[in-house]
Image (cartoon, rainbow, N blue to C red; front, top):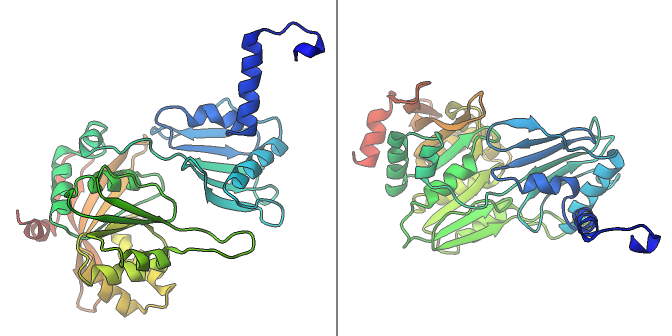
Length: 353
């Protein structure tokens, strides 16, 4: 710059250096957004729209790209840092970046209005239940019940839609586990960071460019069972691994847990039935395994103002036809207080209260 003959100060040189470094090594114009406190997601919808979620719902930012080619270059560079191919032959990628950020990208014209980038930012630290209480995610009474569920070694799933805080809640609950217990985590992308002294993590791996080297969650669940876990945790149940997880919970691995996508607690049995079908497990067998393996469903929801909160705690009930349904034990009313449901007495009995 100085060789061009124009006077350039040190501040300008450093500013240009930082901008070039972001474009070459970092996330380009997205880098400042990723460093904002509390940001969980950065979403790029083509060149003109960049959205962030910092806990209060999605909001549009003034950040933009010169054109779609710039978005495409950034997506390809980020995918390449994780050793993944992203081009017209493979116009999508779902990878974890070296810093733990989860990247999903789809190139135009497959996506409209242009190349899309979705970045899920891992939490820098694990929230405690007290902090979740302060944030309004759970009431003090609800936190007491959740702590009792963990202490009683009940098997549970944290359910909810996308962005409801399932991983945050699960990490907070795992932090309550007795320090003498050994936790083995199985995850598609390493996100859980419980504040616990004895944690082992296994992370799935997609196939490489040649289509080799894949490690599935189902394979890792089986390996985890040979690692003497006191508690087996599946970060997100999303496929055939549900069969091995249910089998583990039925063979002496008490206190197992995980998360699952579901619109409501009542939808969890149907969701597990559908996932088990992908592994060839018949409907009757899936419900039979589920009834014997799982005790509690902790359902989270997201309010219209973006606040994530505990919505319901349900107990599994087996009907006369052998299928499993969810009976409400505790529900959170709009005013925030806990309302006891039909299964409240059954939950209290399991907790010994």
